[in-house]
Image 1 (cartoon, rainbow, N blue to C red):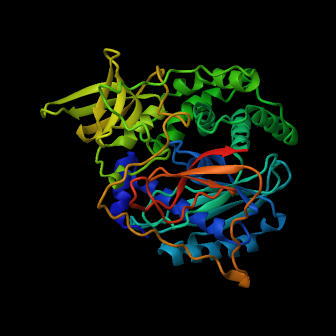
Image 2 (image 1 turned 180 degrees about the horizontal axis):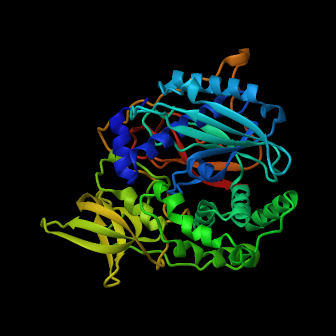
Image 3 (image 1 turned 135 degrees about the horizontal axis):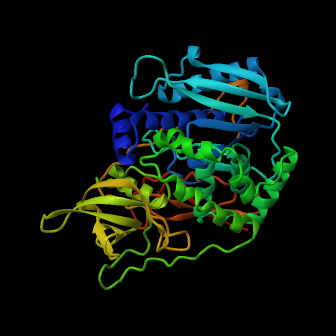
Amino acid sequence: MIPRQEMLDLAADFGLASNVIEKDYALGWLLAGFGQHPDTRDSWLFKGGTCLKKCFFETYRFSEDLDFTLLEHKHLDEAYLGKLFQEVADWVYEQTGLVMPPETRKVDVYTNPRGGKSAEGRIGYRGPLGRVGDAPRIKLDLTDDERVVLDPDRRQVRHPYSDCPADGIVVTTYSFEEVFAEKVRALAERLRPRDLYDVVDLYRRRELEPDRTAILSTLQQKCEFKAIPVPTLQLIRESPLVGELRAAWEQMLAHQLPELPPFDSFWSELPEVFAWLFEQKPRVELPVMRVKEEEEPVDISWRPPAMATSWRSFGVSAPLEVIRFAAENRLCVELDYRDGSGRRSSRTVEPYTLWRTREGNLLFYVVKVDTGELRAYRADRITGARATRRSFIPRFVIEPTDDGPPVVAPTIEGQSMGRPRIAKPFTIHNRPTRPLSSSKGPTHVFRCTVCGKTFRRSSYDGSLNPHKGKNGWPCPGRIGAFVKTVH
């Protein structure tokens, strides 16, 4: 188990309460357990908001529940699930020392509104913070009567902690298009704040280049299966739940975000999402913020990590994740800065993109709100950053996309990254664990998040073998960031 101080440092880096980070840590290891278990690794399909955050990209919304669709009907049994939770808890403890006490585990199998069976599970944990009193719990929502339309994926789980297994954490998930369709259906059906946040956030994220035809077809089939109308913008706008949606925005989301974006900034973007999905209306293309090479010679081979990162491991103490969170959520930032002569000042800016110069300095490019001036601020001279609730309409692309420079995290010569933990496989039932199955057909490209080298895989497995970086030094990177799939 990671030390308490690491948990506190990460909470400061991400601008979140330490108990939220601790739950995210426990979620990661619980997913590792289900991803390793021979009964669940191929038949439990991970989905929902937590799946988006942990397996696709950093949505900057720390979700709390684990949602699965079960392909094995016999798994929806209280006795079986109780035994399974015990085995997974034992395995997690063996790997990490993270305790999941038996008295905190609960399973309730019930008849859902569709007449099928579902289950709600609770698993408590005693994490690095060492809190006393009632153990915090993770909720699991399990169902076996969902229609799975698209082929599932095998994806790496984002686990930004020092005890991440050397070969990573891998789970079986819904495809991105299927998760997107589920979120649109859920938004229309229950109109909850997290669904509105996720649908708009998914639309804003262009790096996965989703197939909207597949999203729409999947949405139509899921609505037909549940005997509900395909959602329309008018249907959502006229829902009697809109008032409750607005009223519950802060209560249900504020604790999951460093700063909560205004409700209207997401609600007002919904028509654009529906026009893109249902009317095939093209997105508004924004210009890419261009760097003047003669003024700031940048390293065009570098891009920031795609997922939220503790920049302490990169030798940077500036609160860069707070700024990146604000950029992705279209929020202005109050920036404290000390220039080269030592003078201190504060200013409100629209954050856009992070670059590295050829000399190794990290630069954050912003637009000053009061003057509209484009400026670059060195990360090592940023002394403070606070996301505000003042939203902005982007003038440029937020962060370079996959069409831009490749993702390469900076290497720090002489710094030991430590040796990642090697997770031991499940050996219950006297059955050896099976390796990830390789598939013929598409080639998946992954990029080492430390040195930037790319690796091609026939299966969706981003774990990396020991290799040398572009500078010729041994690279400590063991997990690759997904780049694209080549058919």
